[in-house]
Every structure is written in structure tokens, then in C-alpha cells.
Image (cartoon, rainbow, N blue to C red; front, side, top):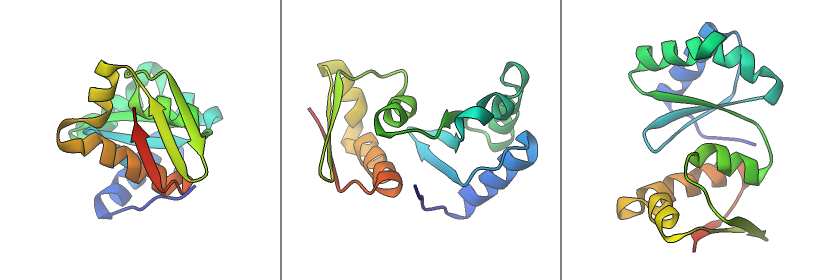
Length: 135
């Protein structure tokens, strides 16, 4: 896995490490959320008691924050797009197809395809996926 970080995201990763005591190399933005990717066994420590760490970081950065576990492709995508659900995910070669219902499809694509492009960029960084289709 790998991801591109700009200066704001590097600051966010350092703040996350300082507050939670959990170091992460992966942080990205999706649908106005700041999402941190941590090993599954460190999720409780990263969240803090009653989600205190996440709320604190969100207040400091003035954005919504989500912590998700490092995982394989399908659980990773489910965690990113939650609460939107899809029927199935098909990965062939370097192409992913997400099969979703009409309402979910609209939510996944977003206005002017902004969410589709964000998710496509994230999957390119993490899983070296070349194309993403939502049907």
C-alpha cells in the first residue's frame, strides 16, 4: 500500500500520532472526511475511550474524522464509503467494478463525478487499480 501526501495531510498524520500514540503512514480525504488507516489491532487505541481521540482531532482540524483498519480490497472500500452500501465488488486484472442500487450508485458517483474520482484516486494509490466503474 502507498499513498500520496501533501503538506496538510502530513500535518494531520503527525497530529494523529501525537494525540493517539498510534503511528500511521496513510491518511486521505474522501467526501469531506479525513480518513486514517491503521492496523486493525490498534483501532481501539486510535479511537480512544468513547471516541475521544477522533473527536479531539476533528475539532482541532475542523473536519470530520474516520479511522479505518488496513485490510484487503472489499472491506477497505466498505469502510471508506460507509454508510453507503453496494451489492458486490468485482476485481478483474487492474479494474474494479462496484455493483450498486440506483440510490447507492448516485451517492457513490456524486455530483460532477467528484466522489468517483476521489475513490478512484484512493484505490490507485493503495491497490494500483487502473480503472473504477460503478454500475
